[in-house]
Length: 323
Image (cartoon, one colour):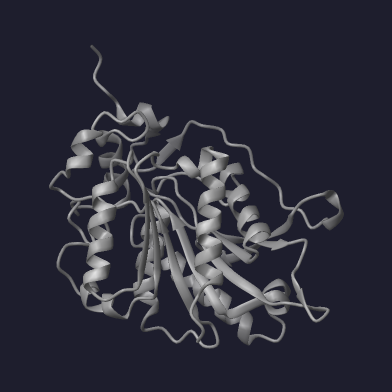
């Protein structure tokens, strides 16, 4: 019986210099500004930090809601994709489709962040990219010549942070970092934390139950963290395990309202539920939506689950308490 190789499972190959060769060729989805092409959302790419080669892909619905014959301002969603820290771009089909859905179905202006990937850039690089993206949105609000889609259609006072998997981890950490930032006139209305990626040294019951999970067996999850965490850090680092003691816990009582989504077939489900309990015990307003049936990333491959999640997000955003 051959030994299980997590690198082979993920179709990646480690290089001597610490980088990865990603062996899966993923097609790039081009942007489109042609509103007459039948698309439900138009899109364009803009640089974030050229030195770090980060950028954002903006999405705007082609059908804009109106009030009294005037175009109504719509929420802004700052989106962080999944991919286990090491894969996917904002231009990949699954990520582009998600941005399109957010824009057309919420509706919202979606800012999808193409952050740096591990192991070429290790944590906290992704959190730093997230902070830059949030400040970039603020800059557009203050600049009379700022990005027109945001300035003409976006409601900066209803900005939401959304992430799935490792992107949900980024969303949580960005939420904490933003608490002491001057964001005016931008206001964060809440965080959507979809199947957050957390771990720890001590195995949970769900991790042991799904140790040989077809999609995310334990050796694969461990490798993802090995590639992403700062060198020398173990899985009880607060980036990976937010339940450990640290300064971040003191910030929790000030955190924004959260929508946390999870599925019973996810090896990380126990950690996600512990995470919700930690938030609630610290006074965070949490809406937890857990389904016993489903696996990690099911909403990316099952259109019905995708529609359910999109409805949850829409309800969370549009039912926000009045300021």
